[in-house]
Length: 441
Image 1 (cartoon, rainbow, N blue to C red):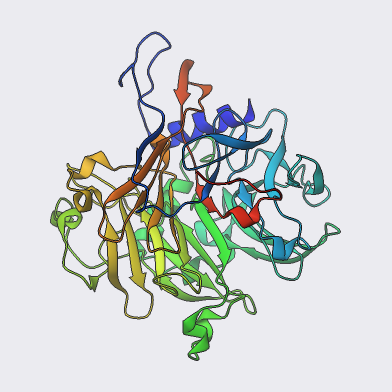
Image 2 (image 1 turned 90 degrees about the vertical axis):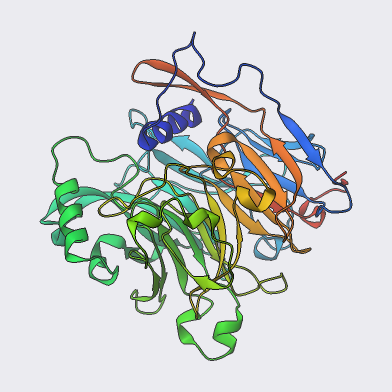
């Protein structure tokens, strides 16, 4: 029930009120599976995601499960066959939890690469003496065969007055298990752009007595190498393919770390132009391009890969969930957004909110988790994570495919039963990734 414990902690961290086993706050009849499918307007593919039932699922365009792995991941995601010696159908998942450790960034003992048949072909349980890998939120297989992992460590941070915090690090692990490179967030706080008031707020928060936050004081939820991109091709070395993009959910910032030096060389946030009075207006703004306004609690920041519409732009799921040092103002009519941002001009060049689909903002909202991925035909695959809703939108904002996950998991919060369909991240998968022929429709 590791995944159920993880979901319960995510719900707790988000501050969501939890119903008792006998009382339901939401609808008792809830449609699942594919609810919209406008063939001819979709990009036909498979979708991969881990669910609260403790498994990782691969579905087709009709919502049929075509494959399953008996482990979940944070995230569970495919590995490019170009990085596995041509072997298709490999995924990286979490295979064992640390006994007695509550759900959060500390609980993962072993991360493993599984083949299509569910056999582990590589696994890692962390440095000797650490008690486990403690991987969380993201990972990436690298071109040299190493694996980059976002991991947790509990230690004092001098810049936070020596408070002991749940910190996060990036470790590059060789196939034989050696850690060959490491970057620790707490060693670079002076590069994050925190204002004096923001740093004071963070010191106060981390110095408050009680258990450390299970998701970390920064909650870095995204970590991936930039890969080839037009900015580096044009001479901007900040965008070197081996440099790493991360984002901090609690800090409202997206950053690029130079792999060579470990320094932050590009940053968006944590402070943005505008007024707290703009909170209800930012979702309704439609003029493009325009400067990036207040993002809050964002997830899955990455550069759109070459060959896709918008290549080189930053795509990010802007949750508009409570976050910031101190907390930023959010609107009454709160809703989430997906933003495509030119990282040089820092202008929003495309956006999606419920308004783009002709609906009020609150009908598309996930205050935590979630993801977005650009597809080859220009559509965008969006995971409205806390509701387990995965859908494709056209560039104009039309919802052309929608799926609601039926895979539930049960946990407890404050002694009460919690059932959820939460999906941390969803990933589009082409049929070429599958080791045997299967059609997406």
